[in-house]
Length: 164
Image: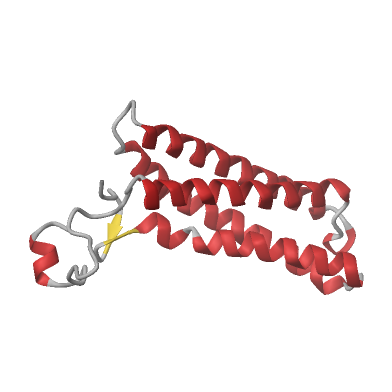
């Protein structure tokens, strides 16, 4: 089943998710580096990457919801997509709470609650990311009917003529 939200022949949601996922994972790395080194720059960097990751996640979610709405009801893909989407909402809430807990602190210093939220968020993001892979790799979501090892470029006339 093809994606509803496309740009230049490719689904938008999988293109966008790399940014928030990378930013949120990087914020956890900054938190770990801060805990190891106690250097102020890491906690500030973590706060900024969390903010950018949450904003990016909200944008990616819009396109994910558009694609999810096209999945036929009663299918495994619909159920997996629902868990994937709702799980990612929880991920974004956990990181947003982590950011809010840092906001009032001196130099964005994370307290234990902020760190727990971030660490729990990245663990859950690993699971929801796996579910996203299950949707594409196993269930064929966003894969065009004309896909294959020798399929033409999505920008070619032949692919556009087939609606791919």
